[in-house]
Length: 187
Picture 1 (cartoon, rainbow, N blue to C red):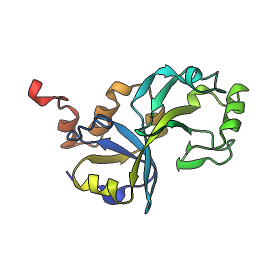
Picture 2: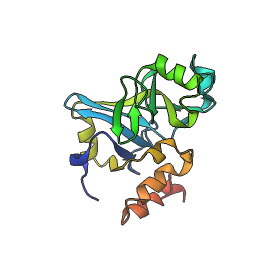
Picture 3: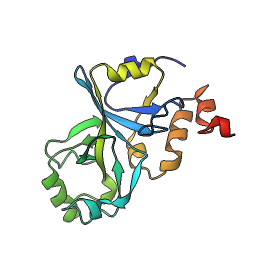
């Protein structure tokens, strides 16, 4: 498999390699939102939590969708990915039509007044973060693959199959990886 860290940038998916056994990241799909000389930030897309946004975050009573575990860093913080950067101040475009963050009070107001639909936002507790050079080192160790991201992947609710589908979409030898059992010794 090719060494892909040279294409690491915001808007890419990070796919945990089958060798990455850290329980925080095992078979995860992350969206990279920031990558620069100071470090990297991303959000795990396929770890929904058992409680809903409306149960956990005040001001978002209309969001009857799962809250997601964004990563193991600062799990007391809330982050949002959305498609409405056209109406939310301070939002950062990650890929065309997909935005990170912005004014949360404005977001709450726009959701509660029906301007923004629940299907256009995804909430995360915490984030995945790496210090300068840390993610590149993990790439060199073979811990991650990359793939292009799309809004559809961010907003899908097919969490169980997201990792295998994303890895398989890379084609070739990745198809074998995508079909490998989680615990080969138990096969």
